Image (cartoon, rainbow over all chains, first blue to last red):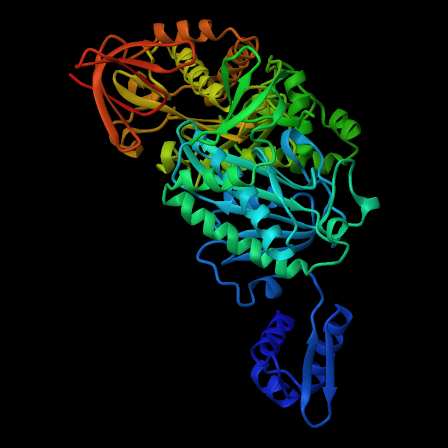
Length: 320
Length: 320
């Protein structure tokens, strides 16, 4: 807590020095205590120089997804107004879920440097190497019906794809409904879970996993990372801040009922439209031509029989 | 824990005495410690007589929904194989939800003598006077789609209505979808909540509140209790044990896909079929003749316009 306060002091004086005396007075601790906190921050990876006459100066911060780093100058209306950053957690979705049950408001973001039981769709494992990706979950409380919640998966995937494009210039595309690809390989997955009554959504947890600085050998088969595709590291803090900003933007659009705009933007970045695909869902498998995504977010397939089929969710495999 | 072991000893020797020596040997504690535990059980409401030569004998147990009392000779396949009994809890649904997130299996039952924030549908309050009703939640993990989960509300209400009829002879009827009435007044409500992905239910919490021995002055407006209708107290323990047995039976039927049987039994006990009703849902209100409940559990209304309307959930008000 005191460390956070010191960091905020530095952030406010971004270019200059902060004197030990100033910190000591503002925080109500001795100058020796200030010095000890500086040592602790250095241990955590903060580069701090000390000058006898000028005081302390923050030169660089470690690229860790902490609350202080993420919230600094984060300009959002709902998403990330509150952030809980964990070093390690079983699953950010489970952690967010429990927080939502305890009454936390929408917009709360849970991040973790490492997940011991990171999950993907249908109980699949999501590999979460420490400090390499972004693993985060957001609590949303939209006033919608359970069947209207699948659009949340769509705009979350759209937010990730847009963030990759804006931060790195890489040609990210969306594999409907919940994966983001770069050069046909999976870089991110979305796991949307709802807590609902039969006719009312209580809350939604939008879980997002992205391989950012993950090296090739730590990636699952068919997976890629921004580092692998770009051949250089990116700032995870900057990336996640932009992602929160994009989520905030598309959530506002969703809440205003402008679903057609989300669907249109999603379609522009689709990796599957106009391609031949196979969709596996509920022990069924159908193949056809990916024709459209309708205004409720369902995929419209033109089957070989000539009939169209409307699919609400499933695993899409690109054929040819 | 030791108290539970002593009680199980008594239960096994239901008609006879258990000697202090026997208990002392079996539990590995001194005879003075045995005596102290007997005092503690007496404080909790157990009537225990002690005879210098014969030992201790359990004469009667308090009517409290504890694990030991509920599990004694409970003959079910899934429901209640594990029971967590709380004296006080915010809401049994929330407690069960957190347990399900932690990986507890289906069939786990959470009971409470008192709820500080008991909930009904759409965030409404459920009044839970201490020790008077039954407030319980069950974790279910059926392999179904989110839209197939509303049948759980139906068979839970059916289980409550059947239990009231079998235990008390009172003419309980079901007000679709989730209330149970006696003489047109509400005696029980069901709150079904799901945790789901877009196309898969992770788990369902079936929450049930029943006014059993609740006195008239503690009931909300329009509510009743078994005590008020029958003018005598019933054993809450016996009632809940039979309820768990009925839930177990109907859940097996549900899992075997025999939804038509649930719907048929539900319709036989319907308080609204063939009556004129008003249904309020999602800020809409429609009135008509309650024609049928279809195989997916939806209510079919014949509107004044002559058209039929299919309603998935809502608040039903009986007109006339």
